[in-house]
Image (tube, rainbow, N blue to C red; front, side):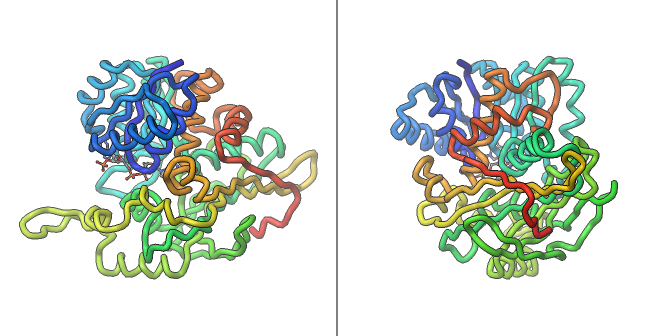
Length: 401
Ligand code: NDP
């Protein structure tokens, strides 16, 4: 039985709070804190009513302010901080965990605000300090990164002697009925998908123009979708932890309508993170765009269809070439019925909660900074299926890649 501090009250924070509340035998008390306390209060009220969990408090915190974080942690005394605010706050929250001796878990790697750059270097640099303090930092425990990395670890453990080719495939086959909306924080999402593509081949990173490579891939229960090669952060740790990989790529589906909107947004400068002066005030165009786009947390009610995310792997087992595809499909409607959010928040928040359970139950742990593929995948995947994200694996099929 442990106290947990959840930071961030967006779509993902809502799911994590619901899911922790569904496991009172592990999460005995919850503190939900975010920049806007009213959002925490809304979620807490919904959790009290829908789940019947009463041991929940809320607080306002600026997660970029270490002394504020330290004060909150010292007053509540959690065993673990689950960080589901924004990637800009990873380092300040890690600093506060170091100061107070509390474990840390997040779902996205640190990004500096002024540069859309996706790499683990900043967080890996905390390795010695976490080790010396005797606490655990779990990095990237959402779906991707997160479950995709754990699927890869499962395949390495049970299906292959050597993995050679890894393709992570991420399809949102859902429809929210809006002309344009992003499925998680628009600022973070647009920064991610408008950058140049990158993949790993024969020991080197190969850069591509944004959306330069497209393949039509078939997804279970969804069908054929245009899938674009983009860079995604888990590739960096996976090629380091699985050095037999000759190639590692990440593919994400986008519809034509979505890409047209994105092109217009970029062409007119609204995707820019360079501040401009508007009516005497400095604003960042992409942050202004976020303010006028639909809130991803509100998309759930009319969302239909499914997400399908998995890993397609080729390698060697018992001297023979083999292929393996491991994936999860998640229905947006199921996610909404259970937590009042759409599938993308759900597929991020459930793994974050299950990762927290693994740590608090002692299945995962150790002193230092870890990417999730470094832990035992088996208890995590068992619990993931029990908590709403079942998964399947098939061998020796055409991977299309
Ligand atoms: P939202 O934008 O909906 O929510 C972010 C929350 O963080 C808001 O409550 C916001 O507060 C709060 N916040 C922002 N800045 C601060 C701050 N300085 N101090 C305290 N709180 C702050 O995002 P999502 O819920 O969609 O996503 C949450 C995280 O999950 C993101 O980091 C995202 O990158 C990650 N993610 C990971 C995925 C994965 O599979 N690994 C997939 C999808 C998302 P306010 O309401 O005041 O703005």
